[in-house]
Amino acid sequence: MGGFSNFAISFSIISILTGAVTLYGYGYEMGGPLEMTLGWPLATVFSLLLAASMAELCSAFPTSGAMYHWTAALGSPGWACFVSWMNLVGLMGRVAGIRRSGGRRTGCSCCSCC
Image (cartoon, rainbow, N blue to C red):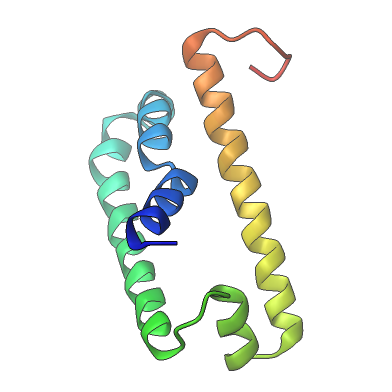
């Protein structure tokens, strides 16, 4: 897989635009202007710090296993299994949240969770 294909798959899994656009109104409604002016930039800074630390790990342990391999190399295989399951739970939560907010935005009535 080439560099652009890898980027495209990663970008579609992260779903930045879908999550940001659909959850903006919810954040504004629940948190108000203060949350939108301070909360999002603060969360962005911490996300960039996390990305920088993961980039450092990636340069030290270049592998396709990513977080599972890093945890197994730096910790133990038990922690690696835990990290891989938490990664899966986080992905499912992200997808469910974006799906729910997208359904509310478009007026979807296909199920009771919208």
